[in-house]
Length: 237
Image (cartoon, rainbow, N blue to C red; front, side):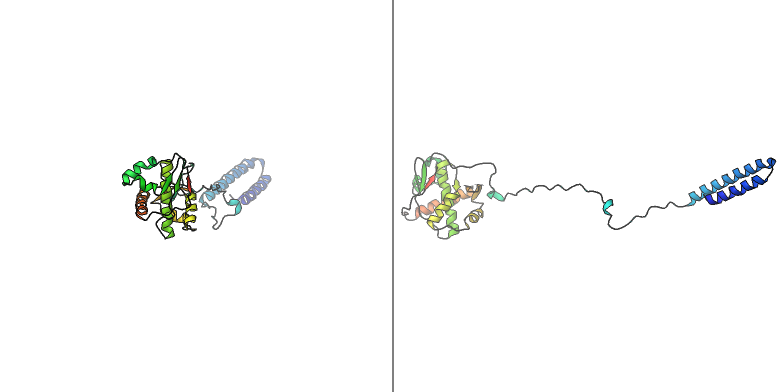
């Protein structure tokens, strides 16, 4: 609606009304009413004819004030992945304890057709401890010799506890005494999960394949000449 034009018309009508006689004023008021109605109708038509203008959408990066605050990201703790059978069993303390006896491995000896003598030629079985009697493990290459040393230590663990458990701290000491230790010892053991299952950092248990490997090792060492007596190292019960 053009308010400037409307005000100008009203001023003209007022001026004409002031100049007319009393009898002419009703006609003047009627004229004002008609003019107002006409202008109002024209204003409504003009408003309806104008297209609705949508606000312009600004492209580009929003201003800092327009950026919504995103919910903070929650960092989830990564879970450690177990690497096959070499993963240690969490929350369990494994100890190699028990009363040493050849009877602790009786079922193993019978299933492998091994005699008591084949074991007693390798270990002296006391009332509280088991002591190794060998000063070599039938192998010159260090990597293979270290595996043999762990296998035999697991046999000592079975004589004590009934389980084929190996104490890697004791094996390290044995390997150093026999001259077959090197810095690859731990990784060498971990590369053979088919033979050893890690229960703790320094405790392993023989798998079924490991027990079979032990049987072959016992047979091989008994087939060799009788070993000379080394400095005796007790295996703690």
